[in-house]
Amino acid sequence: MLIVLVKSAVLLLVVVTTFAYAMLFERKILGWMQLRPGPNRVGPWGLLQPAADAAKLILKEDLTPKTADPLIYRLAPFISLLTAFAVYAVVPFGANGDGSPWAIGDVNAGILFLMAISSVGVYGISLGGWASGSKFPLLGAVRGTAQMISYELSMSLSFVGVLMLAGTTSLTGIVNAQERLWFFIPQALGFIIYVITAVAETNRTPFDLVEAETELVGGFHTEYSGLRFGSFFIAEYVNMLTVSCIATLLFLGGWNAPFGLTLLPGLAWFVLKVGAFMFFYMWLRATLPRFRYDRLMTFGWKVLLPLATLNLVATAAWVALH
Amino acid sequence: MRKQLFNVGAILQGLGITFKYMFVKRPTIEYPSIKKQHAPRFHGLHELRRYADGKERCIGCELCSSACPANAITVIGAENAPDARVSPGERHAASYEIDELRCIFCGLCEEACPTDAIVLTPRFEMADYRRGAFVYSKDRLLVPTDAGVGTPPDERPNGIPADLGRVAEVKSTMSVDRGYSATHRGEVLKTERKGLAG
Image (cartoon, chains in turn yellow, blue):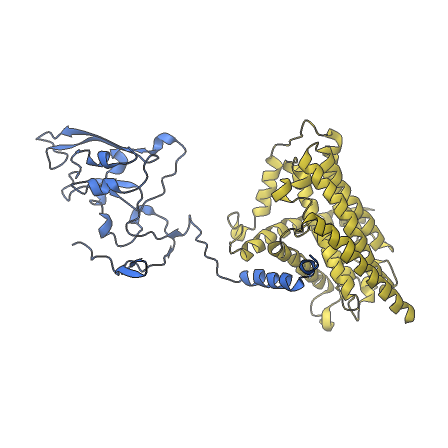
């Protein structure tokens, strides 16, 4: 019990620090790609920027609109935050010699837990937008709900291919099944579908219609300020980290070293792969404009869903024949 | 519409462009620590010059004030006392005020001045929290007695006066030694600034 608490505390610290620096690096990378230096005023190379941002958010006035539903309005950021962090209860970061994972809880249906928790995350967005009692957040929330439902289907279907190949729903088992061949090769289509839906699931460019600051001011968090806004912000980045971890675990071989390069420990490979995926996210944001809403829906239902189903059927046939 | 949805090539091309730009040299000049070099005749904060013997050049004629299109200059002239002359002429400026918030930095005062007393320097850092602080009177406009006589624009070696301070690095597109060349519609009007006045 005590060990679990200590593990949780350490992991929470690691995840929050990663969030802080992911944000700094995102701003740096966006800056470089737009021929700007990025934040470099606070501390050497801007390394204290996250601390300055945190201090600013804490000191901001906490506003609640008159038209808002006060209880749900205050609850929504915590739903987002809690579900974002809860996922890390089952994410393994490496394995001991005897095969037991480095994780808080070794759940044998880890992937199902992940999917269940990440689906609850959308409640933070839709409740927050609804309870703000204002039109832009409401539009953001409606979009968020529709987008989540549309893309979560394809995402889950892309998982199933991997589950069939690995023959297990345990995240550790899936990673161990990739010792020889990472699943992004036999599941290439599934991997592409996952990458696209993962961007949509975390509401980031080019699928950031939920926030869409050019049309909806701030989308679902328009009315939020200070630390409540900060909670949504943390949740977004932690979710980014989560989907990067899932991509690494399910498709990129987790802590398995590529080409038998065991010079680095497994954890280092895991961190490298997650980092590369996070970079890809920021790279996408610097490159692509936002989808139009009808095209987002068309793409989700008419392209991704049939492709994911096709992938599922093909994988099932292949597994049955072998 | 189908074509646009599936235009993966365009997306990859875009990703290539953004990735390439990560390694392109950035043109940013990080201003407070690095200052850009201005043209030698940049129109910045005014300065009232002196003669070599320390007397003020301004004779209080108010021509600058009349020339000013923004009505930013207020000059009140006075007779020089024979035993304590402020300027070599008959009169001097008892009060000389420029409202730098009104000023449009056109340089017409400089052109109007018969004694080359008022000049525009390249100093441009005048920010302040109070509006009143932008009314510059003689105490701030006059060259201090220990700081020489002031330099007319055509005698400046480059755009940065020594007292601008904290110039960590000079980034410039023009040569400091040879000055800049002026062209108009492809025709070179001027290749070098005129030599420094002795």
